[in-house]
Image (cartoon, rainbow, N blue to C red):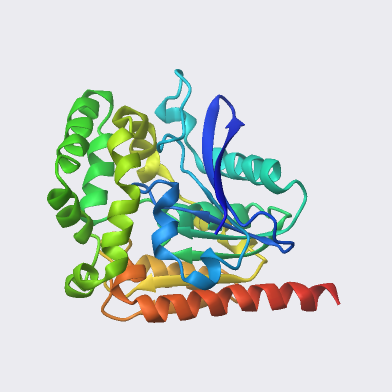
Length: 300
């Protein structure tokens, strides 16, 4: 696996991008991580067949180290239209006019669906893993969004909560496990340890205040009215007992996107990479293959 990190500009932001196997001549796979994960999250959570054999990019969410936000970045900047413009711009700067498949987890899943709902012309298809159309979250991440959404007076408490959460590795491990439903599988998985070790440096260097605008605005995001506009192959992966994104929202999402495919990880939560690793890897590879084949058929 040959990797490098680039920084791409968008409206004063410097978005970090992990670029892998760029010499391969094939449509790129673009990964977008969740709200607490830096770009190297995917290095531990993807099967070797992707890591070493596919051309892929991991694009940061705004403000996630090593990305840098502008000094005038405020919550009102964040909207579904802003997400759409941001990721369209970054993808175009990465691959120019080439076609891509976009895969996102959680907020990354929202970002992928949002691109499709806005008919981004370079999309071959999207895969949403524990993604959402509306930012009404549960669990520990939902508590953080609700705290941030209280307004600027809650900003110090929000920052303090994140600071506490990264004090020790054991505490980080425990808190990350709150995203899972099958916590035994989560904590027994070698993927979990690899992921936590891989993201450690970026998490410790994270400027916590840079995350506030995103967390503040997540509860306002809602693209339900746009889901019927999606006309590219769409795969929705969801845990049956996700503590963050409700099963009801996942079912509504699948029912609202025409011809979408819903894959459910039974008795699993927000982290199918660790809770159901074998099935996740198998389904991800199959979904990528089907989207690529569909693109070939459409060009014939």
